[in-house]
Image (cartoon, rainbow over all chains, first blue to last red; front, top):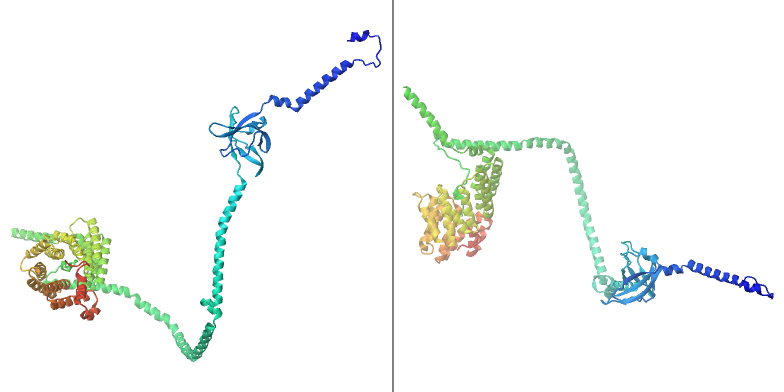
Length: 309
Length: 297
């Protein structure tokens, strides 16, 4: 080509030297830039690192709104997608999840999954993986179990039912009490019963007045007795004066009594012993042949004749 | 001369040896008798018993019984326990008497293994009073041949009375035969017992003879002061009079028995009311002293 141009005799209107080379250079540069961009964007890395595959056994009650392509989250971040939802021959359902390889260290053998809704009670369902702390997962056949997240609406309904069962009997009792109170107040107003009679009848007040009159009369009668009592009290005062005079001699009297009675127990014991000795003496005297007696044996036993059938 | 002197000394030694052998009473018994406190309790108990103050007698015998425990004396326990049981029986407390007998026997046998005929005698009488006649008969038969004639005679009476109440005439005849075997002439007590048992034996076949024997028994017992036994004889006589159709005589006998029983029970204030009572009530009052709640057969 360079040779061809050298042979041309006619000089071109615009002399562009090395154009083809420059174009080639630019094309090559753009290709290099494109490859660098791709490498920088990590597309190749994604291609070269395949996703981790996780089997999630779904609850027997159903899939809970999960769909193929549904979101899978780990610790609140997107961690993969649901690839398939399948039914195995035993009737259980399971989902195969493509998991970001970065999530692999957090999924352990004790990890579980929860099926949640986007906005607690509404929105699309997604699978939330629970971080595990047990042994590492065997990623050649990784399986975890999923549960349906508790439905807050059911808890609210149960709580309301409980409140209803507690409150309704109270309301019934309150209604009954009010009815009773109403009936009682009505009776009282009509003058029934003791309280009703107190409110409506003057008879009791009349009786109270009569009692007061009688009491007055009794008080009037007591007055002379009171005068007599005061007279008696004067006498008692006089007697107590005499007693007061005699009191200084009381300790001496008490001492004398104490001295006299102190010897009584010993005296009694001596009397008992003397009596016993006397009895022995009498028995001995009775047995003396000189006095015409004979030896008698004193028995400690009662006579068998005293044993009465 | 020398020979005479030697023989005299020998005779004196032999006499002393014989005297010491004669006083062969157990040392422990002598020691207890010499204990003034124990002897005083027993003597006071006897005096109270003779005066009919049974509650006081019980207290004194109980003190003696407790003191015998202190002395660890089998002799003291046997004597005091027997006296206490007899007093309780006399005060118409057979259940208490039975408990006393059982406690006493256990305490004595713990210290000394020996026959206890006195306790057996009380036990037989207690069982008779409680209406357990077979047991009373069994115990009484055990005592029929003991050397002590007083115990044997009393055992024969208990056997005869219990056998009659149960309707066992073979044993009643056995009791009569035992009393008849005693050396003649019989003492008044034994004679009265024999009359009562013979009256019991004859009351169905020969009531006329039986009523005479029962009356004779009651009179002898009145004479010797055995009033509890007299009451039983009066009751027997009243029953025989009833079977003979002598209602007036029976009522009179029931009245006498009830009056005696009232005083025995410490209910002398009811004596004036007895005249207004019917015969059945009088009989019930009289029987409450001598018999258990079970009626006589």
